[in-house]
Amino acid sequence: MDIKQLEKTLNREPSFRLKQAQKAVFQDLIDDWGRATVFSLALREKLKREVPLEIAAKLFVAADQKTVKSLIGLADGLKVEAVLMRYPKRNTVCVSSMVGCPLNCEFCATGKMGFKRNLSDGEIVEQVLFFNRYLKKSGQRVNSLVFMGMGEPFLNCDSVFSAVEFFNRPESFNIGARHISISTVGIIEGIKKLTQSSLPVNLAISLHAADDETRSKIMPINRRYPLREVLEAVEEYLQKTRRKVMFEYIMIRGINDSLNQAQKLVRLLSGLRKSLYLVNLIAYNPTGIFKPSSSEQIQGFKKVLEKQGIEVTERYRFGRQIQAACGQLAIDDEE
Ligand code: SAH
Image 1 (cartoon, rainbow, N blue to C red):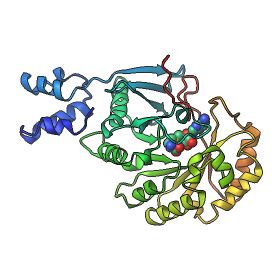
Image 2 (cartoon, protein in one colour):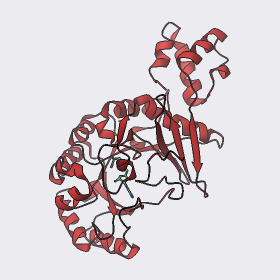
Image 3 (spheres, helix red, strand yellow):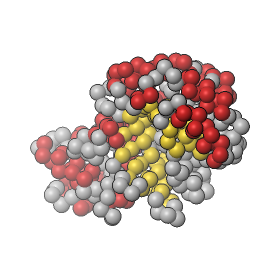
């Protein structure tokens, strides 16, 4: 969907027409202009032609119904995945910012499929529109978003910031920036852009190692943006925004999960104010190459951090059965 096209198509109409159309699409969630009976037949036909509302998607629902993955077909035939996570009190969508990803992190299935292209702002919005339609049946809405699907959001800043601004608008989905998080491998330019942005979006950093040698082995991008530079940019972000940052750390057996690494992590983060960050430990979801850390190892690692007063959370595992968990998003043509 082209989110600017609606305005263009209606630019000769009185301005209340645009408001009616936005309400119909983003709040009433119609998927067919034929149902927008406030408009004349001619206008409905024009809208049908110029702003098609159909979303071609396949759905995969986990047995417990808490995780739903969608595989959305794009206009050029490529496909992109998005994941809905249904928590007891909120619905979060994990959105993609690219088809594939150029970063090639060793542990991530998306990286292994290579980079196809950036998504437009409309293609990002469409992922949320799709799940809002899906949730409508149960009288629910998407309440929060994480840019943790396929791709690196800060290598597609234009579309991502434009989509975030759009999500935030009352006439679209009215999802507050505080309920939106962007996860990055540490693209400095993007962190700086977020620091300067007037939208209070949350920042998450995919750290995954506490020294450059280990990190460069599993995340080649670390050679371009080494830890020290990433942390400097985070420090600036914290100084300016005072919003808590999340450091994500995948626990991979024998690679980055030793107690010695935990101590290194404590030292690495020692310059930051403890009330302004937390470490999110993520069990490695198998994608073929590595093995996940044992739960004892994870608990030991966690204790080292907690002893130093660092807040640690463990990520709840959503959607492994339907290949919808972190790092498992990769388009499989069999799907
Ligand atoms: N490129 C961004 C956005 C993707 S976020 C980023 O890397 O932050 C996806 C999250 O899932 C990241 O923290 C990523 O490192 C993590 N992840 C990737 N592969 C994983 C795997 N196999 N198991 C668990 N987490 C994984």
